[in-house]
Amino acid sequence: MDAPVSTGRAIGLGEKSVRGKLVVGNWKMHGSLAQNDALLADLRAGWGAPSGRKLAVCVPFPYLWQAQAALSGSKIAWGAQNVSEHAGGAFTGEVSATMIAEFGCTYAIVGHSERRTLYGESDKAVGAKAVLAMDAGLTPVVCVGETLVDRDLGSTEAVVLRQLEAVLAQLGERVAKAVLAYEPVWAIGTGRNATPEQAQEVHGLLRRRLDAAGADVALLYGGSVKASNAQGLFEMPDIDGGLIGGASLKADEFLAIATA
Ligand code: 13P
Image 1: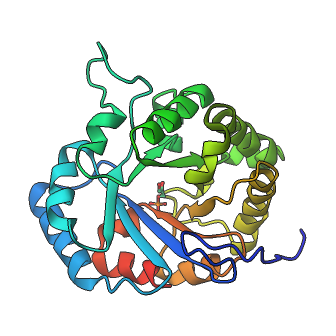
Image 2: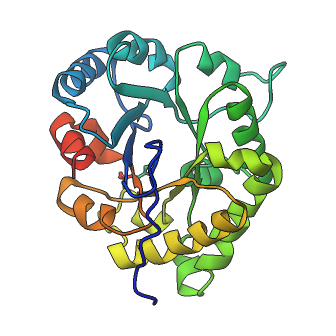
């Protein structure tokens, strides 16, 4: 593998020489009104918003109003974990991007591997979701990642590029306003994170493809990120932050990751 070379990118800082970090919590299907109240209050109280650092939580749909109420006026953004691939209509149980945007959301995760695997979301559907999220004024956090089988077959590059191409085809140059998260499926919820070098190798690949598209996109790593391994990952030149599952449910741990 090539030695990591810094591309000197910045996220939302307006200065290429300064590196910003974005850390997004994905609560998945966890929480209750009482638990969320405590977690959101602890995050709000504990987040000092250090320069160049951004923090967000992506919560289950029924709690969007609660995140909005708890975090409005703070330096913590919030968002959803999915959006419908349809703009509206007779789609029982679906939630549209415009509905989500009404709750003051900044972000919407699209194409998480759990949705691709468990709910059969296709690359094309993920692209459509990214477009609708952006149309609604949300920043899509587009997830890509290979399974262990893919990795063992040596298909990691082909899989993540295929997933990215489907989004590029639909977003076009608007991809520059998206966030991309690399989440190797074998590292999600398993306690087995990619090493910083393994993650950087894929991030470098994604960066080169996005550079070719003329898009300066924040690239997050996700998969068993904890306070104890965040720094090593975030030091890599093309890792601009993290998408955090389990560890985002504990305020102290999540805040420690966000300042790593
Ligand atoms: P864990 O951090 O629990 O491994 O989950 C990662 C993830 O899927 C975030 O979207």
